[in-house]
Image 1 (cartoon, rainbow, N blue to C red):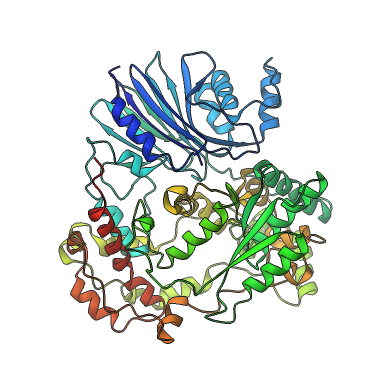
Image 2: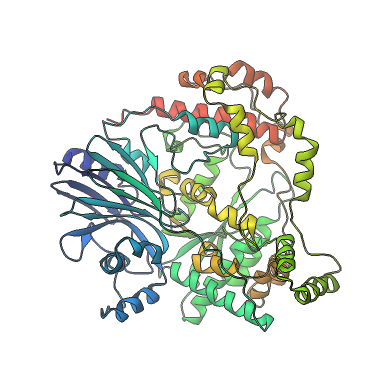
Length: 614
């Protein structure tokens, strides 16, 4: 995705022009197509362009309609035709090739801040009113495009690239202990507003920041709505509507140039690939995708490569397969090329980088099947409770009875009974898996034992039909996933897109009755009839057949010992000697947990040993 950064001076002073230039240099890897630097009294911006499509993009940024209000950012909108119709009703006629940036500016001109909730898509941008000296920073609903900011004195710094902000000499490199504590407890920070650095904040998805000389205000501008269940007369209508929405979601994201897809042998990514190829076929175009797959057959009986190849052959697309045992844990982590903006607990990071490099050699957009598990693997129990509350006994008999007769089993309830039973049985032993290697003073200062208990409790589930799916979509999960797939992490200017996370698709799925449509992805399987091989379409969801870390240890191909020498800063957070003792008996999921400090150690060494930022 394109890169952007800026400095706004609430007092109207001149931004640091040299700093803006250095920010532009730091963002050059994101946008090879153009670089712009723009400075005026009160504000300075830089922008590096990555052309992706399919919609037209502004060739220069910041852009404006009137010379007063300016837009800077990375914008990809869905539902462009709906927006254009809104403008036509307001008396504005627009050409079909209007850019997404101009659509945002026109929406702003019509409705101001209220327009943000009308925007669908993946975006992070700012709107700067030069006359009023007001800045609005906006991030898409799920937070699929990153946005960071920092305030010091009369200056607000912002960017979609964390390392770009760290160039500002007014910002310290001090770490945020809350972020580090969460990372050591669960791999990532649960607070959507924090970053690894104390002076830099993250704008949460679905939020807008308003900056003036008086204050910085952050508020939520949109949430996924909770709407009434969708009752349709014919079962076929559920499939037809979903098919139409999914096709539109893929079409809105599908460039005219060749794209990549990270393909597995499962249903989600293969469905996205099938829809994309079907669109190309309808349009009389060539197959638009090239598939990339990781195959772990060298470790265990992995079918992903074989099944993905079957789909690729069926769709008429090329496929490249990367061996899952081509990289050992932490291989390459001492190299500057594997440094990440924030701590990353993915020992096989090099493998992910290699796959992105494969994709980036031919494409600027990569598709993913992300999002298929949130709602499409639904829960029957909340639906049953909701039907009882509504006194729809006939629907209960028809739906649940029909499912039982057809499948000879009850639909997956997923009411959380086993989890609650386990919690009850183990309620006195909640601290059994608590890390024993945390540094005592750090543990006490950050109240990590209390934080551990807090993180064990799931978030409030407010949706009547799909509480788990809705809670997942409303959490920081997808924001985190897409940030670590961002070019700032992968080092490759490739933008990841996930049609199954399209807001129109999600709103529809959240209204669909879980039985039968979201039992074992029934709706998606029905939609894919005739588009995917039956072996794939009817394949049950299969968990990973082995833990790569444990398998490598068992085979003697890799050992976590001896541990690397700890970074100096690590002693503030981790008792390294206690970690060594814990590691001696670690296996399975315990091994994954014990290696978190190792990942943090490599990251700290990279930060300490990198060339000075300023």
